[in-house]
Length: 193
Image (tube, rainbow, N blue to C red; front, side, top):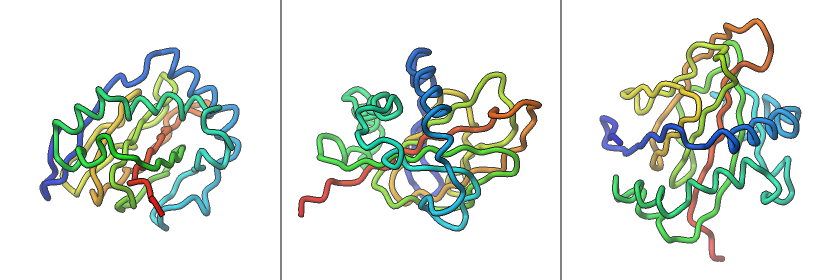
């Protein structure tokens, strides 16, 4: 757990998923999600230089998705308890009805995501790649201050309005599909209109 220079909280989780969960998610991404990814009209800003798609564009029923089912563990009592104990900003979502949106991104050679803030109360980013790792870079910089290394099966939780960017990926593999995958979960308060 840590704070950036502006006092924004973040926390890192390693080995988030077991091998079975990870295998099912990566297979789903390769077969169902990656073919629908595109570089334009995927939300965010002109600073995004990567392929992406929102999960609800792929699955009408999110319960049919392994990505959705497995990333729900982020909201499990134990993880929310860890986040809440770390900083009051995370505690605001604990036990509160929330809305969630999930975007899957894939980074290859020279892909990056410039400095931006998300429009969510909390964001959890999960990184994965096929081993052996086929790229360099793809690290995340928080608040121009803290660099978090892109590691396989790692998640980063951060509070709202935390400026962050993804460093350019340099592809080093000889075969395709060895780039950086990111599953971005965006959480907001549920609108009770």
